[in-house]
Image 1 (cartoon, helix red, strand yellow):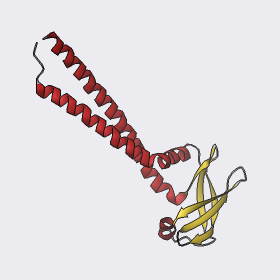
Image 2: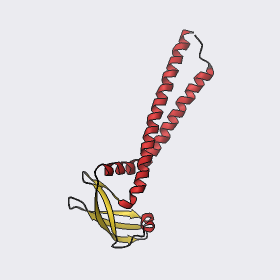
Image 3: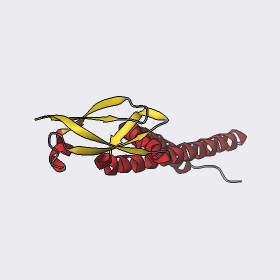
Image 4: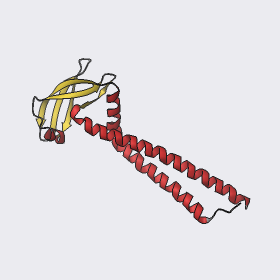
Length: 153
């Protein structure tokens, strides 16, 4: 049997510390993209499209309204970035995507590309978190094994 060296223990400790660091970074990314990524996922499960219209436009963005499948009128505000990018004006029609099972989750069709990116970012962060948990548990088990070996000597 061989005796574990200081370098091996340092490697395991560094491995564990880096996996915890990865866990924190991935958690932050998931926190940033969470709601939008979840909205995209829910909208892809069961989506309906309706046409709404811009009812108010100012220098900060625009307000639009639409009626969902329950005949509930919903109003929301979109940012100036989208208004400028797609040249939206007063009384312009906008296509709204919503999920009839979750009436509070809806988005403009023009926002779908941004939501898709944030969904991919969320999935990547979840996979990174899973990988960090697996790596840290592996490093911890190796560290425990080395402690057991050291006790024999």
